[in-house]
Length: 418
Image (cartoon, rainbow, N blue to C red; front, side, top):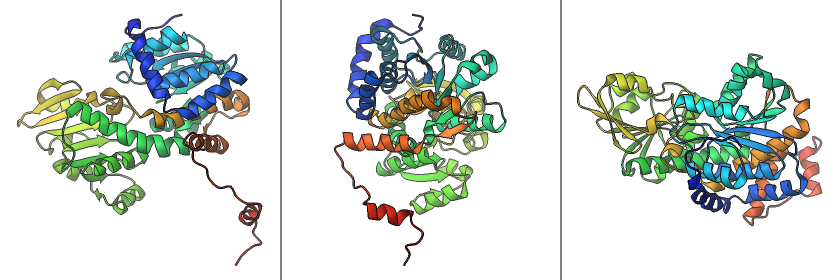
């Protein structure tokens, strides 16, 4: 088996951490139990480009239990947990191509390692695997049934490809499942982003001015958690509806240039490029701390910050200090990459349980229906989304009501009025 990881001797430590994560992933465990019996993924080769974490390891084991051959590479150079990669290689015979801190060339060599397994289904977090296939491995397109995409940024890229008529196979946007973005993006990103900032800086959030750039589901989650820790939260937005919602939720809303003057902490969660840029650095306070929780390291204009700095030094792990010509210091966390995975461990496993349950069920759905789908981006079928919610409630010991026949008739009838 071909693989490329940091150190196979880390496997035992990784195995223990994978087991710890599994304890709060009951939905995926229920799906794995069924997959082991039914083998719905038999004869399927899955190529996955995901964050190599303990939660992802449990997804890989679930897919393999369903009969799939699986290969995994990292979707971000700083998100890999090296002990987890080692455990998957040693104990599960899963080819893993991922090393934390890998450079760009190695990152794409690892994608090539996965593509060498000739996948028939792809799983992406950011669409790098899919874009590589379309740009340099088009020979694989005819054999691929379909793919899944985990994150907002990737879905945006793939919808653009579909609109331009260049998408080579159908994609299920797992990110758009209610049980994914409502929980993963809001509660997962909210908690893990704050966790990453605290681990990197050990700074007090209470009493600070905390600027959240973007008020989508991730931004809502980060703002909620920062407010809960006593921060004075400011939101910047370009969408008037989201900006209005932020105001109604009790947050101050202002342009980025104005927020840049008063912020102590800044977090970008937009999925767009250069959200915090040169003109904003010019007015920031001494000691401003910048972090990103969008998928790619493009939301903070690092090049401009580097050009403005007379000195750059790593003052502590995950914290780079940029000293400007006038002596002001701006601190960039995790090289501008996903701070929740660069400096912390990503989302809690209880949240990823639902996201990865969607991934597993989406793979099963593609095996059954993929050949009938157009080369478009699809939302997760509602029945799969509700099945994940149902399994989660079951695992939590929570029961809910069902509609009576009378109620079902009332909801479906146009004849019954006042």
